Length: 222
Image 1: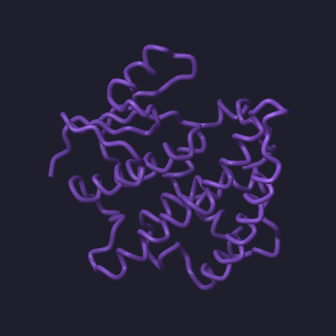
Image 2: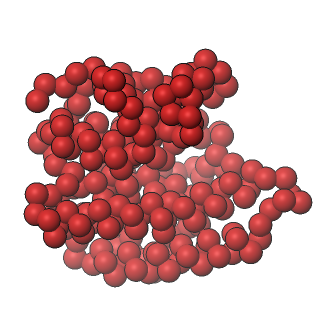
């Protein structure tokens, strides 16, 4: 199906925005990049009119407003498919991909953001116990993922899918937040493959100018 004018409202440094951008870049899907620049009140107001929750990314497809990176990728795969398919046709394989997408969002992304957001708070409002629990969750998640990735190229097997779109920014940023130990060699190797994937490498490069804003300090790598 020929693509209409798609508009994506992202910020290049946002991990969830990068997740959606990977899918668009994988298939060279034409779209308009409506960057939500820091401090741009007009852009923020425009986003609020589209999606009052004001979380990004948001995709506009004609008169349809589509929030949430996972749903954006599902829509692209269903309505504007390209050479890379993000959801397998096989029902069992599709469930595996969707589970892994949830794994990266809930057990890597969420605890990682907990630590980052806590660092932004005033010192007297910080949640030391919550941060400790988030770090413990990440250690458990690294261990599970390391065993899962043994002998695999991509999260759900041999094909790059929605799960890998989710994994790439999650693992990229979490290693800045709670370093992935060398004993999790399969996770580190998978992260390296994701970083080298052209679609994500492009997203990484587009985000470089914003590294100064990372609350914990961006490391001199990646």
